[in-house]
Image (cartoon, rainbow, N blue to C red):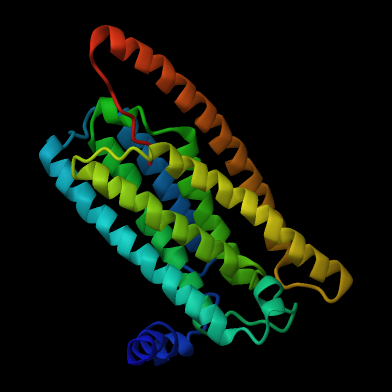
Length: 282
C-alpha cells in the first residue's frame, strides 16, 4: 500500500502534475508555428541526410550502443507514461463515461491526464531520433527508411497537438494503448540493439495493427455518447485522428503483407545460399 501511495503521488498528485495547465501560446510547442516548424525541420532533415553522402555512417559497435541507450530511454518513458496515464485517468475521471467522452465546452486541458498527454506529445518529438539512427546506420540500414516510418513520425506529432488543443475525447485511451504497445516494441528494439534476435518480430507488427483496430472499436462508444447524450469535446480533432489511424492501418497491413511474404521468399533463398539478412523496421 505504501508503495502504491508513493507511485500515485509521483505520477498523479505531485503538484507539477496535478496542477498542470496546457495553455496555447505559453506552454512550450503549443503554437501552430512551433508545430509546423518542428514537422518541417524533421522532414527536411530526413530528406537531406538520407540523400546526401556527406553524412558518415557510424561504426556498428558505436551505433548499437547509441541505439541501446535510446531504446532504453523510450522503453522506460513509455512504461512510465502507461502507468502514469492509467493512474491519472482513474484519479481524474468522475465516471467511466468521462474516459470516453469529455463534455464539450466544459473540459479544459488541465490536470494529470493532460499532463501525460503533453509528455506524450513531447516524446513523439524525441522519437525523431529513431530516423536519425537509421540514417547513421549507412546505406544498407537506410533502406528501412520507409514512407510509413517518416509519415507516422511526422503526423503523430500533429495528432498529439490536436489532442491537447481541442481537449479531444478518447485521447487518454489512445495514449495508454499506444505507450503500452511501445513498451513491447522498444523492448524488442532494445534486444536487437544488444545483438539478440527475438523470435516475436512479427508480433510487434501484429500488435500495432490490433491497436488501430481497437481505436475504431472504442470510437463507437464515443460516437454513441456524442450523438445520443451530449456532445463530446474535440469531435473535429477525433475526425482527423480517425482518418490518420485509418491510413496507418492500411499502411501497416500493406507492410505486414509485403514484409512477411518477402521473408518467406528470403527463407527459401537462405536455404540455398546459407545467408540471412534480417530486417528491423522502426
